[in-house]
Amino acid sequence: MASDIKAMSAELARDPQSVVFLELGEALRRRGQLEAATGVVLGGLEHHSELVEAHDLYARLLVDAGDFRRAQQVWSGVLERSPRHLEAHKGLGFLAFRESDLETALEHLELALAADPTDPSVVRGLQTVRGAAAEAAVETAAETAAAAEEVAGEDRIFAGLEGAEHGLLLMDDRGRVLGGRLLGAQGEDVSDAVAAFLAGAAQEAERTARMLGLGEWRWLVAEGPEGNVYVTPPTAETLLLILRDRSVPSGRLAMLAERAGDVARQWLERQQL
Amino acid sequence: MSTVFQRVLDNITRVRGVRGAMLVAGEDGLIVAESLMEGVRGNAVAALAASLQKRFRQAMEAAAVGMPHFLHLQGEDGTLIIVPAPDGMLVVAVGAPDMNVGLVRLEMLRAAESIS
Image (cartoon, rainbow over all chains, first blue to last red; front, side, top):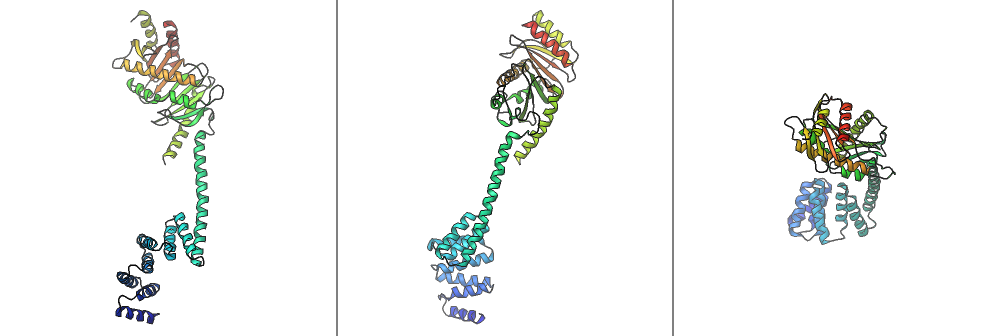
């Protein structure tokens, strides 16, 4: 090997335009002499810039040196000249896999396989990337399911609290329902209608309390002939509403509001993460 | 201010802890009669009280629990109570946090009946 390198170096010295630089560069690279190999390849490219194999070798040297971005550019240039270039597709597939871009990796490796179906490194690479893609798909499905469960969970913010399914509602001050549910006398969902009417109520309560020197407003209870409504602001921008029939004492409403308020604050904090 | 309205407000403000009271036209939020402590912007408070009452009336009707007959806003340093009278007027009282809400409520319900 050493003698080969010596002989090739001598030949290149005699004829700087010789294509032996390709073989010499590859030999030096295999010996780990990256700097010397890079010098030889760049020197050869000055005379043979059209030689895609030289660009491919340069890209592999760049990978060896850790310059993946530049290697990607060089291999992309190779594919512009030679769209079915096996090594360029393998190299770009490797770089994409390294960046966890499995789709691009698969694309390049399948094109590499099309260029040479017998290349064992391509077959192994494809197996690896396909396995990773399958794992990623499973993870994505799990994340999607978890996200769906989180969304569905908005209806269950208050799960476990008394009346969670029909008499607890969290809304923002613009009247948008954030979670919970209110049911009317016939069991119909009245959450959106009630929330819409109470849009801005928190701001008005705050302004009224301020003008009257009442300090920060804590809660408001409105009593009706068929039921009572208790509202309190878990945060400055939200309103918690509890609807109960008249048999529920106000003290119990206050206790429930405190617990539901804690739950609402924790839920809102989770949404901001 | 008519003597009827004055008497009604006096009965409310006599309760210990009550800082002031007023009668408000529910539809437009204008003051009809008032007995408030100095410095309180009665017009603004009347408008806000009327608006709050209206919002809750609409919300409670949507929830099929009927029109509110008593609203109690609790602040750190005080209380606001609104009692709608049958004719649409609102009886409004402002008090200390520790005022006797039960007694004030009774006087306000009487007031609401007497002015209708």
